[in-house]
Image (tube, rainbow, N blue to C red; front, side):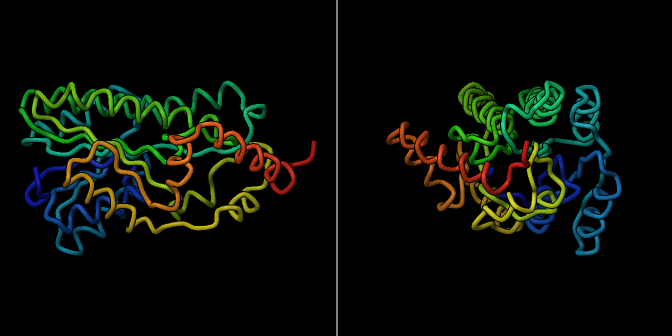
Length: 272
């Protein structure tokens, strides 16, 4: 599968940010896109952007934390013809120290960022095995490639997405199904204005992010990697430096992240 033209793709979390750009760029390349999101207004806006540009898109309101809803989404799309691509992009972001996270926060993370991917992957995989082709693309993060302090929950679930994707990839290959995991670095989306930070100042934390790429650039990187059927689609290079050092010398990761924790506590964390 080297082209998106004439293909059918589901993109979860397609109401905004990276998900919206994935939908738009897939449409530009001739794909019939299904925008899945719990945010119906945002999903409809994505569809409007695509159709006004002459593309084909439909929205399906879906809570990716609900396995029955996810299965209904995939079943509905597959009933109309082959499902060529499943982009599991939906998720949430939270930062802060482990000590400030409640168990409810962990459940929200697990349901939103890993179980949603499990549900989407499971439903799409069954369909794609039967039809003998397809490509599942799970969106993780560079934080899914190495340990990262101040993001214990986020790193944990994103590393689970990487593990799921790369473990399934060789299993799926014999059925004609490709599996990729996308690991983008910092992407400048609307989420940076609303994500939760535990016991800290969000604006102060955002100020520590020295460089961000646009959602469009991130979407283009992902689609380029998908066309080449890469197992790991990791970018940009400057956000991968910690991963490279971690692979060469794991102890170096601990050293610089202790420095980061100290910086967070002095600049971002609220006083006790």
